[in-house]
Length: 335
Image 1 (cartoon, rainbow, N blue to C red):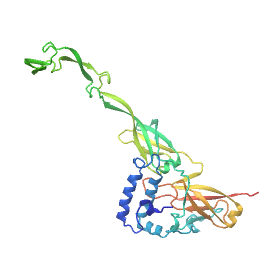
Image 2: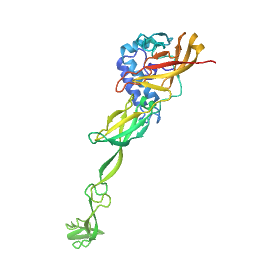
Image 3: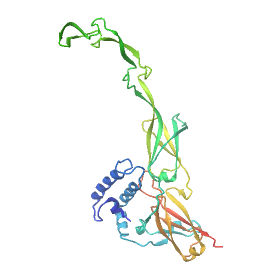
Image 4: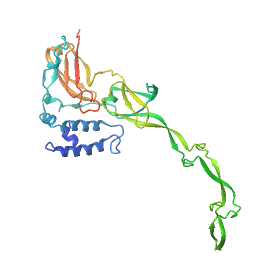
């Protein structure tokens, strides 16, 4: 499994400037809009951002280096959750193992960057059009492209915005259709002379007519879409302005069957046998990013025990922090 240094393609002794240069290069290559990157695949793009968020912070990088090449997971009691639930035990992973060097790649649950069209629902208090779009929790984990339908007036390409066209009319009576007036001389088949001032050397009189394409308005109406990039970590009910338009976009994040969201934290239930809870067991838990992590359930756990896995939840909106993944242990009767 690649570590963060391998993802950015730098050595473990790389300086901060080298890491920044490598990050910029990798982002250009792995961005979903890049021709080099396969369409609809943003997994590598997200891993590059995750690697850079750790390596650019000296303290986080030091803690991460302590986990290389491998570090066993340790569980310690979490005092922050003590007393939150008298019937549940809460544990957390130590800070030295928050990146899980032995993580296994599963089938990604995170949907690739996709696009959706918003629909108009109502007007806000100020009379501005309000559009809405529904996305899944997986789509809220990454970047989501939303197009807001708008009507734009574009200058007519046939009359160039004038509203009229000069069309061909009757033959010019001054030059008799030759386009030349005054003293003329014929050399071979070429007719030399001054341009006719009446028909502007066209040979026919230009008659102004209303443009049939734009009906004389000078512009045509096009139904287009304004793209709005929804950042990772958006919450249900988030409102975003539409650039260049006097309207807003409201995002609805649909509930997930496996994960429940609590702010930036995610909760997932794990069903285990009662005998396994008594003696302790190591289970594999996949986060919303599709990466499986080995989680050790300590001996003596009971139904409702919680294990907190740092930095495996939802990304914080417009920030670099990542929430936690809370694994809730559920006991299954063996009878």
